[in-house]
Length: 465
View 1 (cartoon, rainbow, N blue to C red):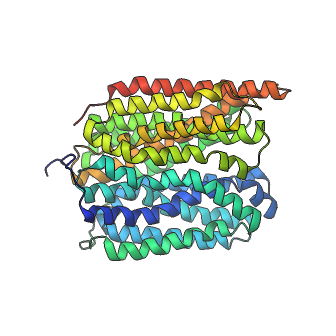
View 2: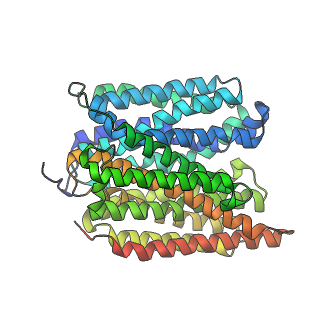
View 3: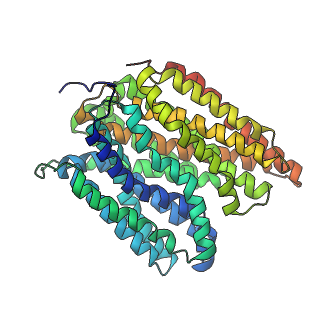
């Protein structure tokens, strides 16, 4: 099979129909994640459990997602893209309705696991569907649109979640998903090309037994670093170590199996995919790790509510939204290297004011900085998302989608944990607002340093392909 081509002048209208179809369904997954994140205290109170218990509403979703991501490629080859997309959206719809009807913390956690299983298929399948539809052409422009859920989620999720919690019952957080799921299913049935017959392909069961639990263990261990004790906790280093061993065993076995492996890791010999995955991991640390610090800064240091903090973070999302299209066009025209370097430097510039901010720093100044920071995030992520697929054959796209998704997922979780641990260490013993402000400044300087490191490493990216 021939390699994919790059960057003609015009995108086929059929490609845009596919992009907008998967976009509608993808919004349900991204909204769900960001809306639930602001509701943990409300859920703990209403369901009469501790916050540590109700955090499993988020944790089990993350773990179910991690276990399921590796099988997305195999399931697509067996069922076909259209059938799998509709089935996963239908399962997410069922999980959403059940979550809205949950009567206890245990039932809600179980139903969130159902959503996580569906999300683990939907997230990598989004990229696969649009890249295969585009045939490798205009990947920057296509990715700038398909990334909309990742942009709109952080903008609208906390705001919509806050409004629901103020005026409605928490169950409406899950009913919000229903229109997106229904519309996504209908559009997929009408727009996506018909699949061929269902195929019988063996599932790499041993590979799944290594990779799924390994990825889940890594993410679980990393997520526990936000608790007292950080990386020194047994429930951090035990699952983290076990997960790394399992993933290493999977990688060694997968190299020997080649195309028969659950995920063909030999694709990492392709430098555009390998370098994009490395930078997506680092961007998860740099970009999304600091995104956890920002609401904590506004709520803990400045005493704002979750809804107020969410509103103040809107400029960051708008910056990303505004830079997307330009980043996509430039990515197709000039390649990823210098664009990503510039993006990391813009992120650094937009984060810099928080390295000096205290409890009284002008909010308009900080919102302007967030606008700049958000623009940099778009300039970083769009070219990297496109770069990972350049030069790959159509049959290689599903495995590449899984690899890039895992890099982003683990990087984001690791980055958030590292910066929270840094914040906790810096804030230990702080007895005044001024000392707490210094702790946040220290944490933001680490985020600034990670952005600078990202700019340096980005020099190793390939130029225009």
